[in-house]
Image (tube, rainbow over all chains, first blue to last red; front, side, top):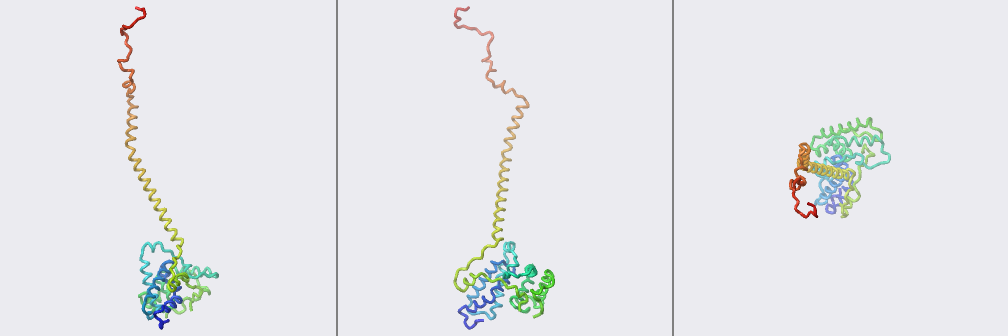
Length: 174
Length: 114
């Protein structure tokens, strides 16, 4: 990270380029719709830009900041009622997307929130179960269990994972 | 390595980056279909509610008008049932003063007749 130039905001821009899509996906996994996820992303980076110095672990800091803001936003009852869950637009559209992939994306979106969050943090943010546990305020074992249960549920929905999906859980422990 | 290698998270709107780091105003995301849909549902519900309220008020007004109408029709029905001689009591020719007298005297000129 560009810690040597803390006042220019260059570190923040680099952080945005590296993590913004994954943070948006994280927002969707936390139950936000597309525009809400972008709103939270905007708010988080506005706050990061106002910091006098970059935090120790900017990526982890951004995840926590995003989660806090997303949770506050989710509390509105009307928003919860009106929120839509379009799983397929969580990811970039590819012309060769198979029906199994679409089914797996729907299955991911249909998981309980904690499992969905653990899977997104593990796969798309590259966090360890220890780090996921700290984000979710649970033990690493619980975080690992949420990940495994979530993947198993997707597997049940889709059937045996096709080659195109790879194996999402080769080593369930960090 | 990302096992779901084909699943690239959707990128943010291009304008968001410009708004954060380029000072440009942030464009708003276009409203989704459901976001356009729910206000329509709200409008239909509001119209239905107001329509129901109007019908109810109108019904109330009709109900309020019923008693005088019923009283009038009842009165007319009473008149018809008892066959009250309305014409006999009020017709001017039944007045005795105008009834032709059989023994009235005539004192006017008679043109030569007795």
